[in-house]
Length: 165
Image 1 (tube, rainbow, N blue to C red):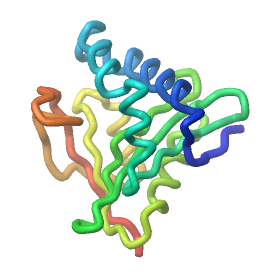
Image 2: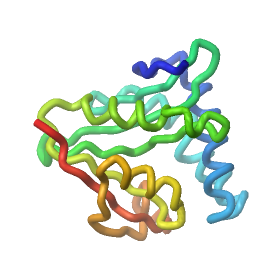
Image 3: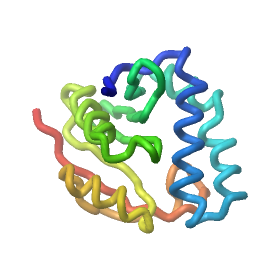
Image 4: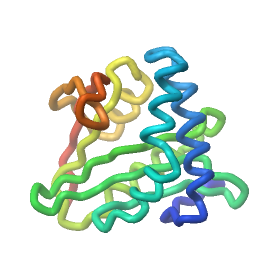
């Protein structure tokens, strides 16, 4: 049984492992192994994870069974736009289908009182992720050619949904 909790600095190495494992399994067919390794080194470095953990406008969650981290989620909130941006939601391939993604997503939805919208970017070829987000009330609201950061050159579908309250 996995329990969702806030991540801490002691989780950084395990978080990096989840990100690297899921990126290799999910995105190597889209971008090739070399490009995926470049992205892992840049976006999912220990320094990047520590930076996310330290964000005062962010929430970093892990799904933990006491022995391993099965999934992670990271989101930030813009008070000005009252929008929550879900930057990362990844579940280890061997842990998919256990409800971890659902539980992480549900918790992120409640982490930012007063937020009105939840938004995310997802690769248009990642059909399982798009189906997951659609099943959780997300709809396509746009597209970008630079997912994750400026000039990434990675296309994405932008999805959003209103939040209660």
